[in-house]
Length: 258
Image (tube, rainbow, N blue to C red; front, side, top):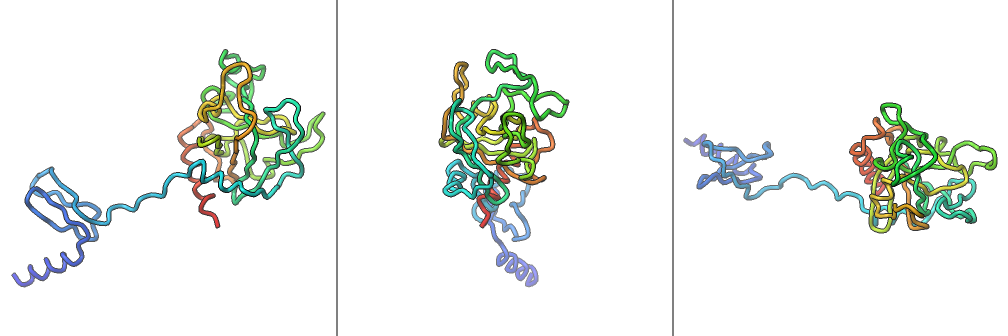
């Protein structure tokens, strides 16, 4: 009996949670993560204990925008806003820890699989990236961002910034902020080498940006974050759940960087 009492006392000292099964109180030792079910009773009630550690809150639009208070410009020159047909170049690409950002409007890229749809018509049936079946991406269903071409072409002799040299690729995850909305996606297409600020119909719709035919998109107020490195590239470019999970992870790491 003495040994039993001593054991019970030790258990009580180590206890971190108390559980009640009906009128019966038992102690859950610190080595366990949950209360023990006794006698088939299923009305187990957790009374006290440390519980599981709460995960940190998901990154918010405001959290990410706070990182753009200053710009470490990495583009050798400025880009024109893709949404404005006759602008002066005014947009730099800026560096963060493991990411790049730029602030512009949003022109809607309707190229790809759904190019002949009435919702998002386009003359371009192809996108720079293809899905896992080898088809062009679908602007109506896949949230993706367009980056400027990384190589000079006729009419655009200089390239202010190369996404490839920056460690980005088709399938790199992105976070896009408009007002208080935050959406994740991937890099999915390449646009003119002198313009920046384009995304798919699906990305615009997620952010509450106008997608109605006529002049869809928005002139300003959109911030794009593109995450660099091989560990920021999704394995299946059309897997939106993977892009959102990886994008949120990289955004959290960005916010935690010193």
